[in-house]
Length: 266
Image (tube, rainbow, N blue to C red):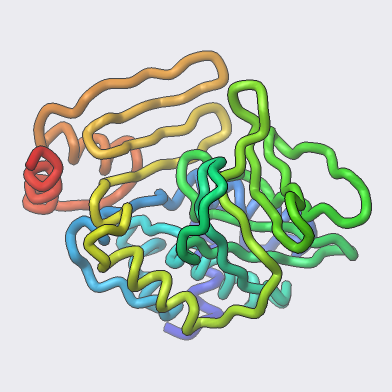
């Protein structure tokens, strides 16, 4: 299958085909992507081969519904936007969770310019990530978008922030340096192969929908709304598979579910 056909099938899956390629389209593609294609470390946990070429990402995320994390999800979206003529730019970030630390470049994002304004499109951060394009700060303060903003904390250092517990919390920081595919391969290799990497050690999966966020972290499953959080512990591999497949849309077999559960309880 050629790239244009894969892109059109991706858009049809999100019911975004035959649309005008304007800012509303950009906003809708982010919103529908994070509600449809699960953020997931299932492949990392199972030791799957996870190549980053577009056809492999398309097969893994769109067709097989295995989910993926930032290098996969944002890599897929980047190529879709490139094929559609949006001229996206690739950047890497450091996940800091509101701490003044200096971890590796293990997060991938995309920046698109539209109508003279730059926006971060990030469909690969997980349950705390944004559902919309978030504007870069350029000359004047921006309105907060759905409790998100990008703040320039130091000259040339930008933080993706979410408003939680009464204050803005930095999820990750990034700089507008030059990056390429080789940089992604390095970060990706660490993230899904290194024994200390988070996704190697923890099962995570999530969908961000309009009225609720569904989040699995190891053996705890939560459904988060504006007014409440429902949480329960997973007690066996059958229940784990029901949640991954039925609630999060991540397709795994019974054997894979047993392997995941046994690894987590060990």
